[in-house]
Image 1 (cartoon, one colour):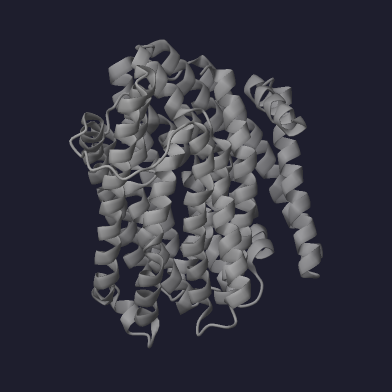
Image 2 (tube, helix red, strand yellow; image 1 turned 120 degrees about the vertical axis):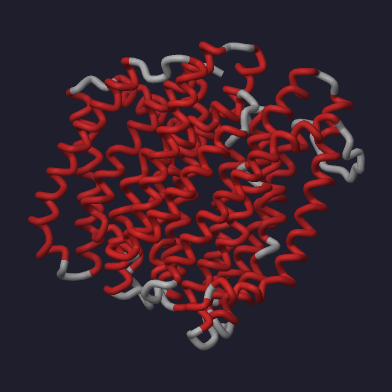
Length: 519
């Protein structure tokens, strides 16, 4: 796949993903409306975090990264019989492992009280956390099988159906939350039921598209299949890396749980806004680029891999830099417009906006890391990202503890942002040592033009925000209207300055989006 194909596929996924993120915001609005930043919201955040973290272990993280290159080799080999045996054996082994994991987690859920002493001091909070964990943990089974199906479809250059599945999850949570939110003992239970139903739908929805490629799932116990063994050997370092990530995220949440009540939930609400940017385009790029890099790696096309990587990094700079400045300047109006309804109070808005200020700094580092790490996975090197993740984990945990003292939940968000840039820097330096120069003149020019345009945009938005403050305070409708106008003004300003600077990558991205919209 050339750069034009990567852009075309990424835009196609992005349009679907943006719709998904909008539904995700609606889901978070409902959660804010029902729970706010209360103890129930903290409990839901911790309980949902468990299967989400493990998803990186056997879902879209280590498993997918190890599976795609091996599956690509089978597709290139041309033997349908060998390909089917590999898929069936791998599916059976993963399903059995996931089922055992779910059973253990459901039985062992009460041990959470020993890790969350601050929750245990509030009547009913730890009990709710344990119940929600038991309710939602089976999600890991369905979302991991959905991720396996997505990996197969992506290898065949089928991206849109898999990108659609998060929309189905969000619709499930929203629908069941609305129907049952006021009919259960705690609204968090309704959201938890929506998670489970959504996970099942995410898996089942993709199966017809996989069948069109003449691939199916069957029970097969040939676990000595060479492909299965190869995937698991590649997964071992990735699994360790995922474990590092889990410890990192879990300890960060434990530190947040020791702070003011609602801190865990506020960090989650803030992180969702960051994920809107990452999911809107950056994750789409990293999803598309892995099969492209894996294909070129199999053919020994090193220059083609570098071309794809450089192009993806330019797109990352083009998206994350203006998003960073925009979120910093407009953080409070955005949070107030999206969340401040029902049980989500002024205090909740202040907490989330404060966390968002520090989360926004890490956008570019996180986006660049997600692209660069795919280069290692395509070369079947899953160990290097693990070693780097271990270093970054240690740095993040130390920073989380010490920065949370003067900055509270803002310190935890800032620690994550610093670690994201450190992760990218270390991976970049290692990759440069292996394959030579990665950053070329085009990347530097694109990043510089995007940065200058973002500075101009941020200055103008700050001035306009100060001017409009009095009008925005009249009503929620007026506030929402002015906030949307400011967002549109920021987009047009950024685009206009880039046109003056003749940023060709922005023009190329615009043409690709317009073509996709016309179709």
